[in-house]
Length: 184
Ligand SMILES: CC(C)(COP(=O)(O)OP(=O)(O)OC[C@H]1O[C@@H](n2cnc3c(N)ncnc32)[C@H](O)[C@@H]1OP(=O)(O)O)[C@@H](O)C(=O)NCCC(=O)NCCS
Image (cartoon, rainbow, N blue to C red; front, side):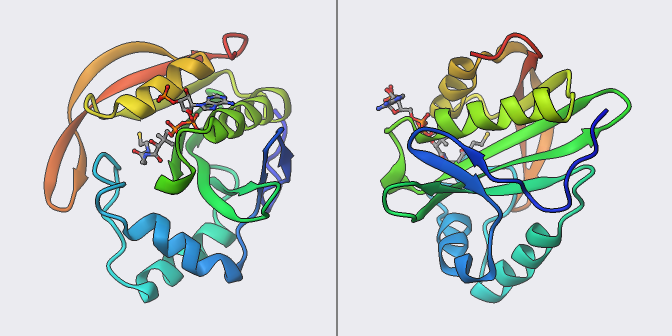
């Protein structure tokens, strides 16, 4: 099993590249993590202030690469950060990990996250030797479910009842799974 690098490696796709976040990305990260409407099906409370986002980002950047890593999704032609993608809850022994994705509304509907997702899956499977990848998705979150299916995930189960606690509210989620070799 390959060891995760300490910082997010650059992963290339056609129109986007995945790269580590930098301190100078703070405003975009805040835009991503404070937009309540865009985060309505997200699994974590929205950020309430720039300061909260800054603290969260510090953790994102230093991270805990064995189990967690985050990438900025950068549009190649403009070099603007348009989203983020991550893996988390990596279980090294069981070669399993969860993934999450979040895109600025202005960059949605272009297929950018499909490209980013494919690049991440390649990295997880080919470089880290991950065997099983999971995505937990609220049943209402049609764009995220469509993305998961485009990437090769299958709906395996759910609703997993009260799996997420967000802003003091419990939410149930569907379980999507992908086994190495099923990626598209
Ligand atoms: C989940 C999320 C990242 C999906 O974004 P998205 O833009 O739909 O996904 P993609 O970037 O892969 O783009 C796919 C869309 O672009 C369209 N598209 C346009 N050009 C394309 C191209 N060249 N290649 C592929 N798709 C293209 C596709 O048809 C599809 O649109 P459709 O669903 O209307 O058919 C986005 O909805 C989001 O950030 N949501 C908020 C955060 C969130 O809920 N995250 C998930 C938590 S589980």
